[in-house]
Amino acid sequence: MKFIHTADLHLDSPFRGLDEMPTQIWQRVHQSTFTAFERIVDDAINQQVDFVLIVGDIYDRDHHSAEAEDFFIHQCRQLAKQQIPVYLSYGNHDYQPVTEQLNSLPNNVHVFGNQVETKTLTLADGQIVAITGFSYGKRWLVEDQTSKFPKKGTADWQIGMLHGAISQNNPDQDHYAPFTLSELLQKKYDYWALGHIHKHQVLNEEPLVIYPGNPQGRHKNEDGHHGYYLVQSDADKLTAEFKSVAPIEWCEIDAQLNHDQTADSLIEMLLHKEKTEDRFKMIAFNIHLTGQVNDLTKKLLANGTILARLQERLSEKGDYQWWPYQLNLLKDTALPKMTDLDQKYWDQSAKDVFSQAAVIDLADKLAKYGFIADQLADPSLVKQLRYEASQKLGEGDHDEN
Ligand SMILES: [Mn+2]
Image 1 (cartoon, rainbow, N blue to C red):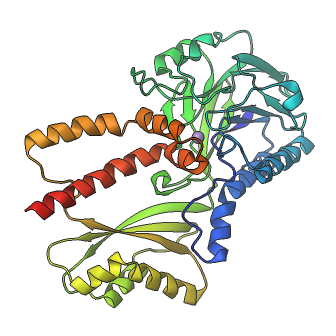
Image 2: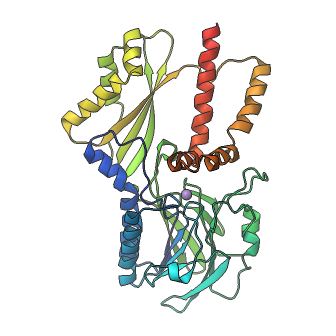
Image 3: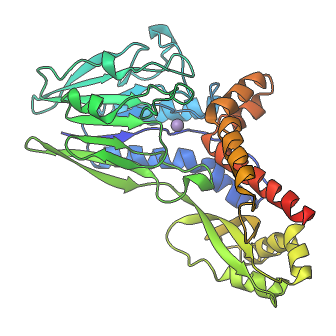
């Protein structure tokens, strides 16, 4: 048995706020979620896998684009031509009622219904594979779904497809089919194909319990390598190998601004900060201001001049290996200095205000402004909000002194 496990394709991610860049780069960014999946399909065909598993979030938003759907159907047809079946479940980003008549996908695509169900397939060598899963019918699934999965039956291989997050034992956070690892292991399955968390990770070795991550990161909080897992059997054992496919890698690079640095010398330094590799990189530079700095350089940093000049320099060469899309000014003290008492209140309020639940609640209230709700639904935003709020507080604190 040989199969591909992927999830969280987020096809046609909007990459908001990044459209002010050379067309050549914007197209690369905009196409990246498509390219990543195309590479997975090519690999499936070249590797002659028995089937492909896609565990939720095929599309980036509740109302996905026609372009994304057309692309996805086309790719599934490529797999159909090679008789490769696809097993698919919808996640919290593309939740929908699953009904026969709505299904415009080719016949090789098997979509899991909104209730947990098991589908079986017979491999060329006669082995039987049972695959159990479900699709989200709504944005949140607060109840544990794993309890509805049957224990391993008579099939040669049993695989569970689960788009969800490990239970935090907190009703404010457990919105995505919460589960525990021991619960999964009790089912005696041969493989757990997870989805939802965008960073690839192996939660358990025997049996394998794996998050493949999204095949293409969408912003700097989804940095590093992105791809899928190729899983193969050797006698009665399964091994999984991570395969990188993302055409774009998001990076954050730290740099120090010294007191005698001019705009020109800073630009030179940033130009040489990044060694180019095989992968195209989108880079956010974090410039740390330590001690006394050249005031003029600081002003040119703050008003965007230095970023614009850096981009100009790269555009002159025209051969893009990387692109600086952001330049962040960071004071040495990332967090404000507060008395212990203040810190206590800050920690408490930060917990209440910047919880994912509070932000999602706000997103629901702003639902009529679709673009705002979409932004707020992004978990990485909570981190960003918390960080920026503490920066602002830090500035206030500084002014008083
Ligand atoms: Mn996702």
